[in-house]
Amino acid sequence: MTTRKTYAEIENDLLQRYPNGIAPGGIQIEDLIQLKIQNTFNTHLDIAKGMAKIMRADMAAYDQDSRQSTQSLGCWSGFHAQQMIKSVKRAKGTTKGVYVYLSGWMIAGLRNQFGHLPDQSMHEKTSVPELIQEIYTSLRQADEVALNDLFAELKTTNNRQETIAKIDNFESHVVPIIADIDAGFGNVHATYLLSKKMIEAGACCIQIENQVSDAKQCGHQDGKVTVPREDFVEKLRAVRMAFEELGVDDGVIVARTDSLGAGLTQKIPVSQTPGDLASEYTKWLDAEEITAANQLDDGDVAIQLGGKLVKPARLPNGLYKFRADTGRQRVVEDCIASLTEGGADLLWIETATPNVTRIASMVDEIREVVPNAKLTYNNSPSFNWTLNLRQQVREDWIESGKIGETEYPDGIELMSARFDETELGIETDQRLRNFQTDISTKAGVFHNLITLPTFHMTAKFMDDLSRGYFGDDKMMAYVNTIQREEIRNSVSAVKHQHEVGSDLGDTFKEMVGGERALKAGGHANTMNQFANVA
Image 1 (cartoon, rainbow, N blue to C red):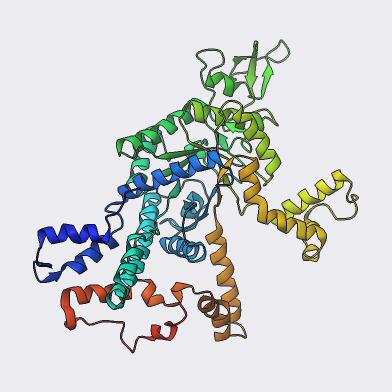
Image 2 (image 1 turned 120 degrees about the vertical axis):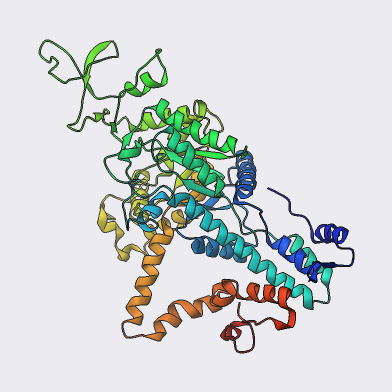
């Protein structure tokens, strides 16, 4: 990460240019020091370079100690990302190990010009770099607001060196973004061009999946179609070339495989040598041997497979089927190819349920070939977490003999609230608390993310507020649901004028106009009602 100059270094530089401490126009160099320090990054490409170094350092730390995993939440606006990072800084005192996840699903669902769309790459591709740009603009503004507060403190403090030390040691709100490029939005050149735009917007890490671009589906829906491995390797190379061209030498690529739930392929790759990527992909096709009783019909396709002439199973739309129950083997091979042939840095295995043991078994097999293989894992809201983990606890206890099969019900009934305070419910909740730690230490997961939390959070809290406000509680609904919680938990956004830079604007007006400045932060500003609580 780029090291910022200290207060003293910037002051010295300015005094070399303006020995009397005044810049042209009568501008005080103290004001110029503040502006230079508030501008924590010159460009968003600088952000990409700095954040890539942070991710690389975090990955190296994880290789030494698997407890050093990282986390993120999916954010569909700059404000969501800003509030997440501010909350983390307030609670932990640091943003170390915390990233932002940019979800293609949420861009499709919430941030495109065509309306609310399913996760099928139908949204305009420019909306992806635009959201990256927006997120980093919001995070940089959080820096400006916080540093402005410190410079305001500097004007009134009796201990300038202590406050200057706070300024010099200020930790930026800017953190790495893992950005979803879906299946690449077209051919390899399209993927390369979009990758460049994403990197220029600040992305240090790009996640790409092995589905067909024009048939892309959400990883938790049916009908997924994968591409041959050499096609995916070319997409990975396209992303790497974009990083290299723009000078982001430490750029990180996450290679996602959807093969666990994908039973179709669009084309049969051509094998050049035995055991190459094409033949290893093709061997899993569902095919029937051609015999005297099972001959080719017009339009049928035949290939040599396993020493036999066969015709692959094909759907009316021309897609080819894989054999049932081969997803796990294909996932392992996908991951190894992405790491060894495609130069990927991290893996993403899309799963249908959250099961540490099953994921660990695949990772163990991958690590037989690539010992330091690491994963990003989607702790997805598509999983019914309560039901899945209660079922896992029930199965574990039955297998160990702790309970009989009739003690707790099987199936959806296990989700019932009546089990919340039972021993099984309590054990499930403890496993939920431990899930990310367990999957990181036992299954090679370097980064845990939740793809769509802010989608569900916004829906849930708007429902809570609306039911109360338009119901019987009226203003009590807003105060009790939101404002009291903001005040009592020191959420800075309770002072909403300050949060969006009102004090920052006042400071700049003073810099250029002195006593003539018309400021918003006077005694009549209602934000003063919250002066002692945030």
